[in-house]
Length: 211
Image (cartoon, rainbow, N blue to C red; front, side, top):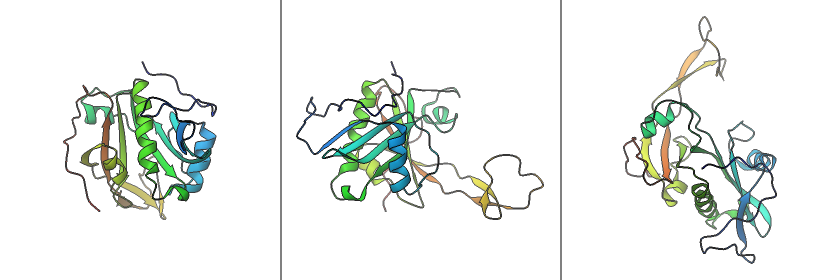
């Protein structure tokens, strides 16, 4: 059973891989509230204050200071469950997307991203989630962090275009009678982490892309 979202920052330290929380460890994770997650994303993520879906939010703490966050939300498109897992089009709360992964500069070179992802994924499995999908924009990175944390790779998203008027993307409404241009959207690398090993992924698995 999937548990409800928790937005409070006062959550217990999550269990580490050795079966217990280690009070003396410099790193630990716990669930955090949206405000904490948003502040970190706005300051340190390349998308800044751009809106994002959020349901499960994990904070990474180093010596008691919040230095990272992994933010999971619902699937961004209703057809994703159909194409990825062969399910009828609809709402599937047991599937999540990793919408933001952010770390502060002080974590560089310390494998903090892998630590945060690995432990948050274990917690999501305990809570009944079945799979996590994540995307990597081809114009920015290939998703080495997902390769390092045992996600499987499933090629690129379908080519799409967006309509621009005076350099501004029109995200809603009809484009009829508007003067503008259609420009190709950056494709994204698709990664999946199965929490439910009985789940079948319909997207063909491929070799990891290289830089």
